[in-house]
Image (cartoon, rainbow, N blue to C red; front, side, top):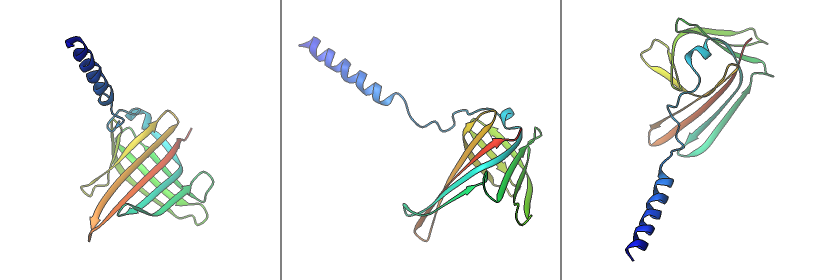
Amino acid sequence: MKKQFYLWACCLLAALLGFSSCSDDDEGASVGSREMLIGEWEAVSYYSEDWENGELVGEDTEDYAGGNGYFRLNFHEDGMCDWIEGYTSSGSEYTDRVDWTYSGNQLAYDWGDGELEIWTVTLLTATELEYEVRYSETDEGIRFETYEKYVFKKKQ
């Protein structure tokens, strides 16, 4: 009887350890390296979702590859990044220069206003960059949430 109880207890313990040993949450896991970001990147696509109290209220997409707009990032070794957005049809362009850092999978932009804009890099190879951000706030009892994702190709 003791052997059966011991065997049953070992099986139960093994099953519990098997279910709880690994997590799917890779937040903070290292993706690529800082050196891989150095250079010029062109946006291919953008996607966003807006939520209010758990209900999807808006989606937006931008096809930079086949569209009128463009968005480029040029990461410099000295920790500066040129942020360039515009439209080819109107010739309008917005440029800014911002400090950047990269650690693990967190790409942080310092706009000089005391706040960091932190994006989570989900893919970084020699030619591809994908990053996303999720943020939320509650205002007058309404929970607002936003999700954004950019996909870039490295300019050769």
